[in-house]
Image 1 (spheres, one colour):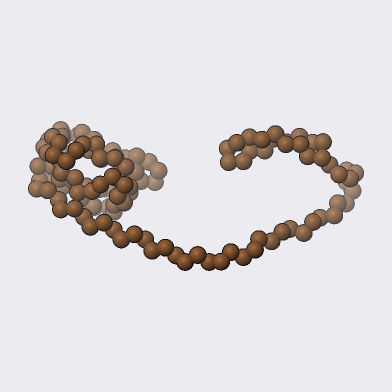
Image 2 (cartoon, rainbow, N blue to C red):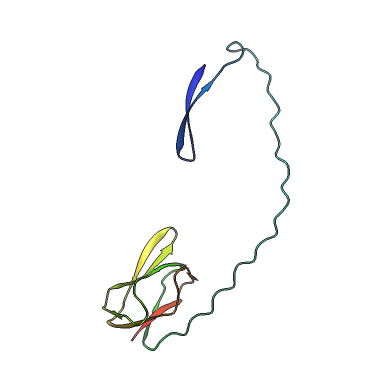
Length: 126
């Protein structure tokens, strides 16, 4: 018996394998199984982008990158201060805080979970 430690998907397993035959002896090799062909799956159309919400009056805050709106940090109509984090944007598995560009009342143009493009208006601050 030979013992091996194997890690599969981050979980470690201890396994024992029995050697059959003499060391160095030619062992018959079983043919490699071939996977059956898989029927092609029809491509799924990407969901239509959500229509942008009407931006409120005031200074728009735009996204500097495409990504996922992970969190809206305030409620619509809340008062924010300059440099407050107002949106958490996830891009390439990293969270990026978007900050208020001035003091004022915030009106969001996006919702949590929305995918946005570069230059999309996230909110306005009046």
